[in-house]
Image (cartoon, rainbow, N blue to C red; front, top):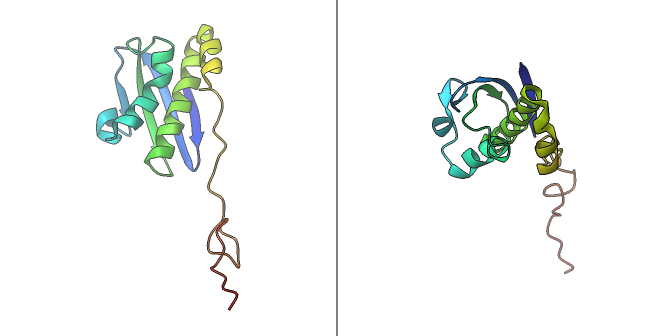
Amino acid sequence: MITTGRRKEAVARVSLKAGKGQILVNGRSLTDYFPRISLQTLVREPLEATQAADRFDCVAQVAGGGLTGQAGALRHGLARALCAADDSLKAVLRKSGFLTRDSRVRERKKYGQKGARKRFQWTKR
């Protein structure tokens, strides 16, 4: 079964099957695609929370956004795939917050300002 995970502008399509715990992202291993250990840990969190790290193989296609957004999207998609594969894991994943989509996105720049919130410098005299 293919599930979808999203974060910021990134979208991850995740496929899960019985295996030894190998994770492939866009045809590359997890450590090759995400060189930062913090991002690798972020992706593996749903598997470790459910003690299913060595039971499933994961194949994912990730597009859009940056590396952090893609890692978050992959985590979301992986949690949804685990839930679809084994319904008894849903309570653990829900309690840990892995099934909830992180809705935070970048705020747009406003006109007459330097950024989204920062104003241009103002001098009285």
